[in-house]
Image (cartoon, one colour):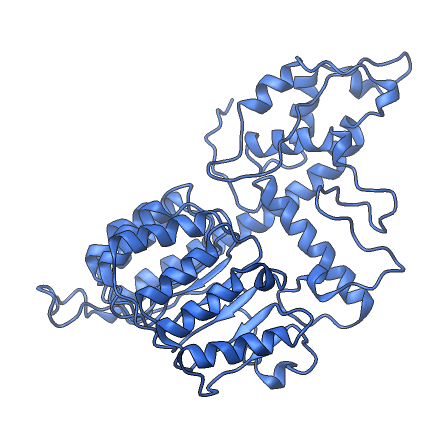
Length: 452
């Protein structure tokens, strides 16, 4: 009945995703075949032929066709082959293609271990709930880097799908999950609450419009977000009154607009809080990296590293929240100083880190220690040939001033980069985002701290 959104959290209106007016001719990595009359295997082979006619393809927009299971299997068999893998597909849209469970199995196999695919749109197909397939879907997601998953308007999924999908879902890369109009009832509420209350959840956008959760379930979900979740910044719960067949369908509370409105206002405040904490955490992490790099990093010629220093024990005791995965972060090595050196470096390492931590008090102790360990490691310095040294990263170096950024390297989520300067800016933003995620600093971590 409502979709509370804090101001500034809603994406600006944009052109239809992948439409010719949004630059189909300019985007050489796009295969756009919406409502093209593609059917079954023959249609899939036409898509494959189009893909092979391009040097590289990153986006497949194939909605409103009739590929069905057979066409879906044919297409994803090709995409899973060495010839298909070379394209490194980042986005696939297969909405309204009459795909059933056999086709979904092919999609799941393609998704398993896939580090390129970022967006998958499967709305309005004909999937039915299979406990084994639902669990397999979640497990495949856990091995991928998918950030957006849309299952909207698959009405046959229902509560059974959620009960076998969410308990096994723990990917830290999934940021946007759409579960609108899939016939959810109050039976799904415990599974939704358990997921969003768990550290497993790193989703920032959750859409559950057009279901039948009921007011009480929605209130419980909002309460869970308030108490346990700091990642969600956008939540939509439009039209979630109980269905007519539910025993409490005519409950006065469920049909009371005032109660729904109060719940919506509470959610708005919670989302504002989460967005503010997320922004503060990211800014604090970047600020702490700068000062930590300056004060903790020593040249290899002027240090005597001691791997058994106290920071080895402290850093190892504060790993990333499971199941986050990141490069191995070496411990901070205590250094010996020479006479006349900056007095700060003579302080005990524990005191140095405590003082540095005041630069970003919003960060948890674990987040601070991961940044300290990263900042003090010479191996995390970027190559001297890069044009921007403000963000050390183990990823490929930033493009130099003389290079021309490619569409793959830019990875601009808005796909509106024009010219060299915009491409480099988007590249830097991407690297900054990757670094924040690898440090577990893309989200606020609640921590109980003793006060004096």
